[in-house]
Amino acid sequence: MNMPSKVVVASTDPQTVFITPYDKIGKIMMIEIDNQATSAVTVVIQDVFTPMTTDETPNPTEQIVDRKVITVPAGAEYHYKTDGYIEILGHCQVVANVTATACRITICYEFE
Amino acid sequence: MFRLFSQTPELLQPGHFVKFESDREEFCGAEHVPANSFWKVTITQQITYTRSFIVPPSEKKTFPWNNHSDYSSYLNLYPESTSTLYEILVGLKGGKNMLIYPIIPSDHYINKLESPHLEIRLEDEIRRQISPIRVYDSPVTEPKLMVWTVKDMETFYTRIYNEGSDFEKLVIHFIVNRCKIEKITYEPEKYRIIQDYTMFMKGR
Picture 1 (spheres, chains in turn green, cyan):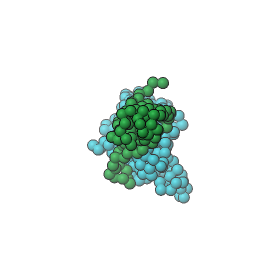
Picture 2: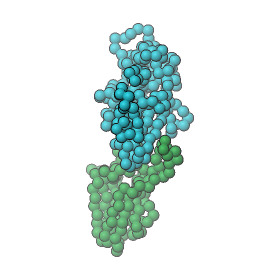
Picture 3: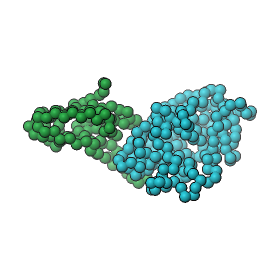
Picture 4: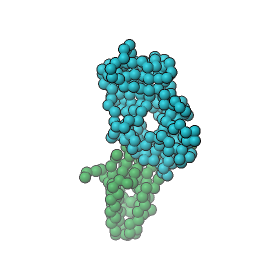
């Protein structure tokens, strides 16, 4: 099945993977991490969005919600087929505990 | 003025007839629509429109359907012409734990049981289960919720409540069947009945 994907390198600066359109819900379908760095890398997949104004929260602020945390040992590969159960409401970004250009993260996704 | 069908209803077509049924003098407070009057649909146009809402857990939002320059808070789904009827098919997506309630006037739930012990209360886990529309009741692929609006009708509201434990995004897809209508003086053989909300409230 064809679906969009993006590769980013592990970085302590958040790397944008995709932006969910207003009328859609993002679904992460697969995650692959190839860590050829010399140390373990912890990767966090985050969902960034601002909720609507509600009766209880008249001035909502931007939320950053961790959706998945994965630690991959040095020299290891990680494959994870999620089948869409990780939902992204807003912007999907990836952030790591270290910056490592030898650690590449591939995320396949869909919009529903 | 709204109805949850058991299957996706057909949209009104030119040549179809409607009856605005009410137990008051006029339908939903719209002076140009006398109670129990018959109208003929002459022209139709279909407009799609989508809104989405991200709601924190255990929080609610009430939004009106009438027209206002603040289009982010108001749905703007009322006609501006007295010869227009909006027949709006409502499809829902996402928000698996969202509860959706029709409200009119601003804080009065329309759908309720007759028992005085089961007034809808969102803060009560049992009493908030009375009458909410959920995504599976009218999914975007098979919408079953229909709302009708006319110019100057009393303001109709929808309240959404997230009873889940995480933020949820509810996407509401409207198919607006914009119908030009003209009043007729005879009772046609077949017609669609559009009921005033007050008729739902009988027996309170």
